[in-house]
Length: 244
Length: 279
Image 1 (cartoon, rainbow over the protein chains, first blue to last red):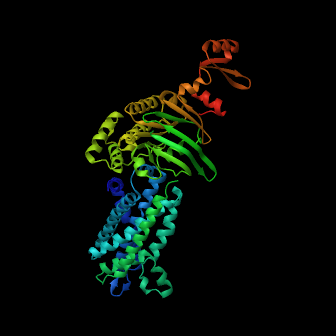
Image 2: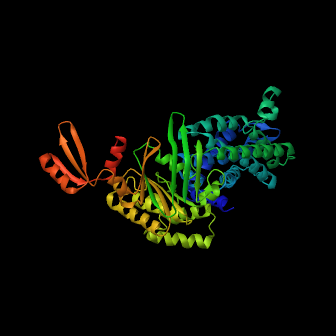
Image 3: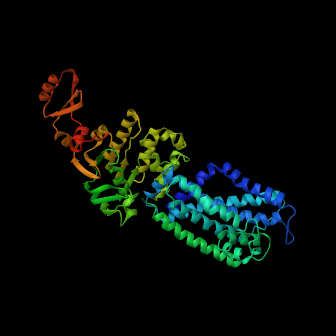
């Protein structure tokens, strides 16, 4: 417990010191997406009696739950290859579960802040999402899955330069294909089935359904939990293998 | 014994960094590993600290096998790595607190020990400064304090004064001596001859992954005799060794102005054994 808190509180202290920059960074991309896709391109679009921006906003929140949680990979990368703080942790009796949980908890904290920023931005655009407990549960499950994946991949990469590849091969494709900007369910089967294998598709589906007052898709919650469990086990394995 | 190393081997894809190392270090000894870059010193230290996996062999810290019981072994060690691995975004005190939490030291003890060590390394006035604002020397002192925070039986120091100016280096030496006088065993690497001579009870030379000499610095130097005459000629410098000063002085007179007389040092011993210089 003490080692978990050490890792978690260290990340929180760093987050607190950079909070203004983080808030600005959390707001910029969603704001641009809302302006370009929500207002400019999709301004006149009607999706089953809803404005496109109402459809878009829960998707952006789901995407933020992925990107903000996955962002912990950058912090771990710095700790491994730049400040070498990770070696300080490796040389301590902290177990790999405590370490991985500490990083994942820090990622979830960032993720919750990121989602909250989007909900607040939505209010500025006149969109009021129904952010009940199930909305946040879906965000947390998705965040847990991507934070665990971030820990695992940050352990697996061999250099600072590889960090950029994670974004290119994991986050960007997921962001565009995971149901943020369009309803995956309206696609033909050949496209819909593979995209249903992405965790973000289920996060978008679950968060959008809850936010728009529809019945929550239970299967998506279960699938997100399964992704989270699998990625966390991968993270534990990768942390254990991180010694050279 | 605080350290027992049996037939330690570490292979990397293209090189054998440590080649069958056997070593025993009694409790409380100040031991220095001396050798040039690439000799295998840092690899050995990283294995001891649990940062690098050994290929074969066995290592015990205070009788605890580091592969079978890594967490128990790590509790006995305090590491100050060669690279400054403090968190620049945290304050001096926060860095110590982070370390204390990693070692599960209860909060009252953690804070008391941190204050005690900040006084010890004369950083009490900078406790709330961000580490990124400290000089290299202050960071090295903080790393030493951090390594001692959980009261280890063995202090592992990898090139503890690398990159420091001579005055600061002597300050760090004083702190290492003080920790050792308080009963903490020290296992350090260095490629500074004078550092090993000044600090160590016992020195081992490492060359190409193997031990080539091991003993008290004075005993190792005595093998060459106590005195050396360096003669500078057209093909470079040659050194001759003499058991007593009078014989060396006599040779010095023959050498004229192009010769100097000095005491034998560990560099001479390393050169004689390996044909290479440490520094």
